[in-house]
Each structure stands twice: as C-alpha cells, then as structure tokens.
Length: 219
Image 1: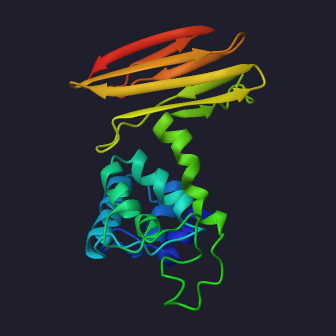
Image 2: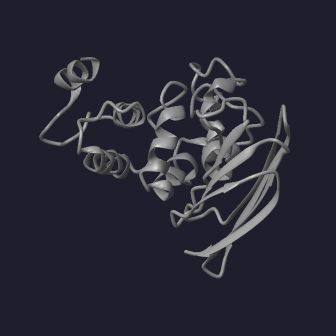
C-alpha cells in the first residue's frame, strides 16, 4: 500500500520517472518503482543527469542511495561523472579547491556565506559504496556478522582495480581484484569457519570456504 500510495502521488507516467535526481535514485534503491519499469526509471534518472550537465543536486540524504542505485543498474560511468567530473560543483570541485575535509555545500566558503560547516562528514555517507560495490564486500543475510559474506565487485569504466580488507570477528577478510587485457582477476582471503559467496562480473557464482582463493574470467 505504501508503494501504491507513493507512486499515485509522485510517479509521472509520461516521463516514466519522478522528475528529480534524488527522487528517482531513492525510489530505485528502495524498490518503490512500479513493477517492470526499473530500466525506464533508471534511464530517466540518467537523462536528468545529462540534462543537468552532471551537476550534483543531491546531498547527505540522497547520495547514499543514488550512488549504489546507479551502480547496480549499470550506470557506473555516469555515477562517476556525477561525483567527480571537472568543472562541476561536486567532490572533485572540493578537492581542486584545496578541501581537506568535506564541506556542507559545493561552493567556495569565501563566496557563499551559507557554507556554515567545513567539516561535514555526513556528506560522505555514500562512501560505504567503496566497500559494498567497488571492493564488493557485504555481509550475507543468511548468516549475519560475516559468518557468511558476499563478494560481488562491480567493474566500472574508469576503475580498473580495488584492494581492501575488513577485520571481522572471525578474522581478516581481504579482497584484491583488477582488470587487465580484458581479463578480470580476483584474490579473496576467507577467515576460518566462514564462507564467501563470490559472484564474478560475468555472473559465475562460487561458494568458497576458509583459505586464500584466486579466480579469473574474460570480460
């Protein structure tokens, strides 16, 4: 009933979307899109981004949903352009202007007095995506606490490698992957008494027990 009520109020059937960057992204992330229309709403989202010149009009409440939503729907390149394209007010703008922390707004502090905070860590809420989608590590709902865990990296144009680890209560989980010569290769370290559910970009699924494992496939 919530989904039906939400779409009755906000969904635009003519454009097949919700009209804004944040509203499209959140609806996609939370499963609020009408059945069978996910691809069309994702396309509407990307159309909005292109119409906006990839300027970012979302912030602390939407980015943590829109970034993974775009990645999962196959628009990783567009998502990177949204976050880091040059000559836009986004995270690249902060870095290029000497930021050493996350600002409240994508404006220079000296030109916009509404930039009240230069230490606004919630602006980086989306960065869990580095682990969950780029490295590919998430806990499994089958056995919480990383007794079982998923390894499902998303290969995005512009990101050719990722490496990272997580100290779980069972031991260290380590993942290292790269793309070279059209071949995806991954190394996974699985702690004792745990199971990794590994999904390669091509769709191959592997269940791996404790130890060090290596896999590769052509993209």
